[in-house]
Length: 391
Ligand SMILES: *[C@@H]1O[C@H](CO)[C@@H](O)[C@H](O)[C@H]1NC(C)=O
Ligand SMILES: *[C@@H]1O[C@H](CO)[C@@H](O)[C@H](O)[C@H]1NC(C)=O
Ligand SMILES: *[C@@H]1O[C@H](CO)[C@@H](O)[C@H](O)[C@H]1NC(C)=O
Ligand SMILES: *[C@@H]1O[C@H](CO)[C@@H](O)[C@H](O)[C@H]1NC(C)=O
Image (cartoon, rainbow, N blue to C red; front, top):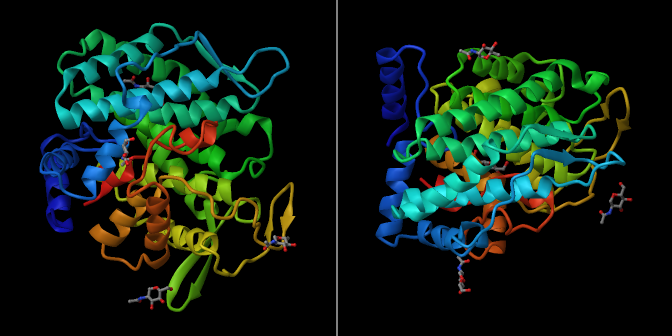
């Protein structure tokens, strides 16, 4: 579909149903699923390899066993055993199972996804731990909403069960997202690195769309544009350079390490795409600021020099870019490459090179949860980008 007709479809939709949200409309739309089903059933690359990457995963297997917890703990509080791995693994499984059903039509995967989602919504009462509980509320809030947004298109999910799941996100995750973006755990407004704000923005935005709450959605979008903390886009990618006629944006975490710098893009992509799928183009905001940041981080992590300007906040002054974890690999590049490069036709030189680098590393396609290590970092993004985002 061309960009123009895409805009037209979205504006017509908004005109026809003023103020309603499009569903499914977080990371994936109906049009996306139609494209993916058709490419996979016709065995066309690279979707086919992306599909095998998913179907090969133990997280997309009917023998997966979920493990819902009443209270999830993240961060060592000296008292409780951290159990948040159960949550991020179950979300990875629910998401993989949901896609497997949508693309293959095999309802045993839909039923399996619902066992996981309903299991959590009937068990979870709190997310707790150290300050890290806010990372859990952010990252897992937005990921969970995405699994449910796909499953709400399954007619056999009883409305009451869907409501129970949505309520879990609205009652447990959203209040923590709101609290963090409002109070920042009582720290200085510039204390928490960008990814803390970004994951909470992503969660608030996603839960707002899932639960059809315009107030919540607006709160997230407004924070993204004008919020006081480091996740506000103008602070997350805060300094622009022009190199060879191309815009490169220094990220707020560039002087910290590259793993977290990359995590910021793992979150910015989904925030922008979820807004875009609701007719609100956050990719283009501040002259394609996310792309400038992606080009900067990709170029440096590929081994090239990038300019750096001194970064100062209440806690640190950084005079050089950090080479810690340089070359960090996450399945987050297909989304950015396909949107900015393929759909918008912009210069994505370094973003494309990083996509190629990650895809080669993943045997021809971006994988998902479990394919990039067993630690939480391997589950900080939903992945499967080659299958889901290739246009
Ligand atoms: C899927 O698994 C098979 C068998 O282990 C392997 O040969 C193939 O390369 C895998 N495909 C992908 C895309 O990971
Ligand atoms: C929407 O979310 C806001 C919190 O931002 C809440 O105050 C309001 O009651 C919610 N609206 C509905 C209809 O649930
Ligand atoms: C795109 O950006 C690259 C890297 O900065 C630059 O070398 C190239 O000339 C640019 N291409 C165009 C068509 O502007
Ligand atoms: C990494 O950065 C440190 C501090 O700037 C520097 O001393 C070191 O040489 C760098 N290492 C590499 C491999 O570039």
